[in-house]
Length: 429
Image 1 (cartoon, rainbow, N blue to C red):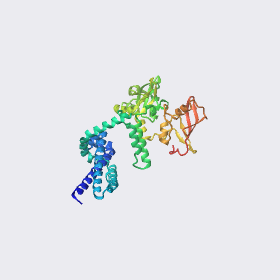
Image 2: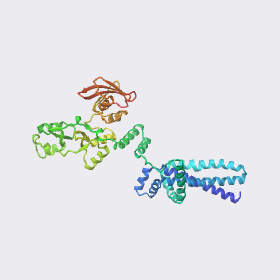
Image 3: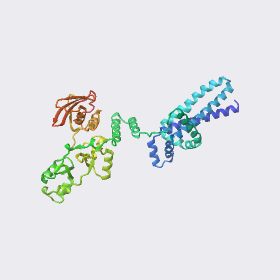
Image 4: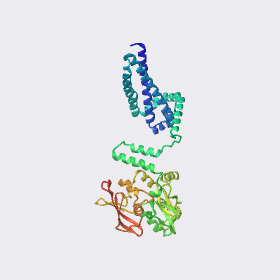
């Protein structure tokens, strides 16, 4: 074997190594974890910062890698063909094609890409410095190639001048669905929690508030001793105080403030000035998103607000706990009932108070009832039936059977819901 052939073989080996570098680098840079890289950059990691900078101009990176990869693959194949022709004659073309296809595919494509997929972050930071140099080196060529490609596409009527941004929320939702660390139950709960966080910007406080019909309120016009009894009998620490009419809320009474007034100042129940110790009410529009309301709770360091509609009418209350429960599920304390207003029947159906929200039912029982302009199960029934149902009427929507059990005037107060078989995943107390 003469010296020329040996040099050619060494050159082919080097070119194949370069091909493996280009292939692995492309996979590592595109598969690296972007949030982790941004976190490392914030911690001062310079290589992670370079990875992020290169990823921001992905078109230049891909162009340089493809150009380099094609150059070395074509050059190595040409050299291998030349060597085998000199050794085997015309048959060398066939053997060169066969051998180089197998070698390039295994050692310069599959092997480096497989390794890069499983070690994307670490490999990206290893190759980023030489890759940045190659991108700068190939910039004139990639710019020229990109211009030619755009011109050809324009001739055929393809317009790539409009670049639409990624829907980051949908990307996050997709990443959440791919999350599979832990047991099935743990994964399901984690996914539900992360999805709920993303939903905060799409839901308004009207979806989670306690409706005014269920809000315990205090009448400023009745004798103070009676009001004190109501406060001490209540399970809540904050109660709205109204005067003349329920819509005219003049303050919010904190139980701790009442006890402090009576104990420290020695005031008798009949002498407590509730209006004087009540704090100024905080009103928020019913259209406020849960995300904005959560931020407002943090800024004001409060966790109780009164919800009003566009006409200023009192609609209900929203608390920090309501929003947290939207993320993590029900937070029960010693005064809470489990799945309030829902009672499972022996035949698999559920007796549900009309005020129970559709969202709570979906979360608790893994149902898929639609959520619209209504919030409660009674609202769903009214919306779908397009009428005010009579007691005893039955409807079939979304695979479930709805029976109107009780109605008080124009309000549906009790509904029996029979879900399809296999959808009673949980049972209510």
